[in-house]
Length: 449
Ligand code: S3P
Image (tube, rainbow, N blue to C red; front, side, top):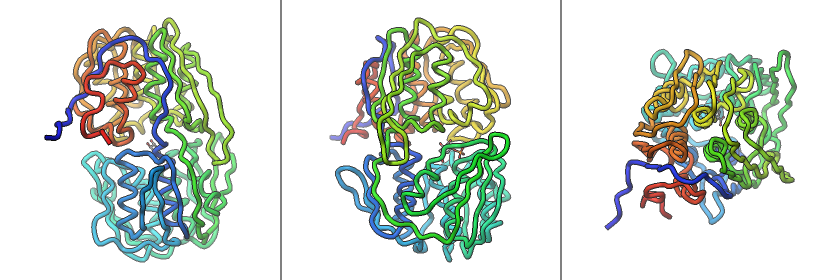
């Protein structure tokens, strides 16, 4: 009989985390590699893709759009359709994945057919008006629930024209959707971001034969230009490890005296590694060892060693885009630091997989840390968390953050719904155990291969 996977994840306090680990392939980069591979002409081989459910959702949407997908020992090969996808005969299920839904809307806006993008309850609470508006300006017809604000999203694609568009939020998902749409529009599509966001799409498009002009704009902004029409050419790539997955162990190491963990083969793209700067400012020792790469994405090893006690730190507002997905991990470090740490300008976190400001403030409070949300941030008074039982809020990053907090709390921490972790990091609990974390049932049957 198959063992029933435990719904809960319990982590008990123990010795400090130590050792080396290899995080799974980067989720953001994997989505892009799959999408560009599906659009390119020829076979694109993607090695070490992220194995989580979000990237699986992108693959199954591409398969429903006619892209032949094959799996091999090292990853996935896609036989791209030379920019012309096929009309799907079913709803495109994006699961929990905002990146799948928003990025895919870009190329779908240029296809002469109807598609419907939908997902789980959490995805249906995340805004899509930010892509509906500019894609309409490019000439596509889109509509969405609740006055075009939330999924399901219906896209009736057609011929696109280029636009010059200033993004109201520095969203890499929106910029990427528009760059992908811009590949189809005759002329220059120009996008202005108020501050830089993760730049994986700009780095990857040239490898597929589509140059992107990048210029520093006024007031720290950045301008991106793509000139269409362009046809993509297949390529091969190896996805670097996911810094956002590694972040939980790095933050836990920073929070514990005597802890020292090394992430191996991890992406070190500076648009993603703001957490390292924050941990350094809080007194942790951070050693980055970049390795040569021809993939366009910096990567290497990073070691974080915990000091006797972290110091509280107010995260400067302008650092936030570089740690947008690491706020739950930062909150764990702040919960152990001496003094009161703050974060501001983070209202975007209210529309992630959960309302992360509310979820982290609520969970930290339930675990015995004095934490409170503000309209646009968090205030956390560090100490030794007591431990307890918390909800995952259908958010993989909230679940993983609270789990690593259990390595240095007084009592155990239990996450009620561990299944959500598989969104990005199915082997998270096993890695936590391998680094010395005391995890009940680190490899439930559902994650064994
Ligand atoms: C992502 C961009 C970010 C990030 C998300 C992944 C991407 O979202 O939070 O987890 O892969 O482009 P926004 O573009 O909404 O900031």
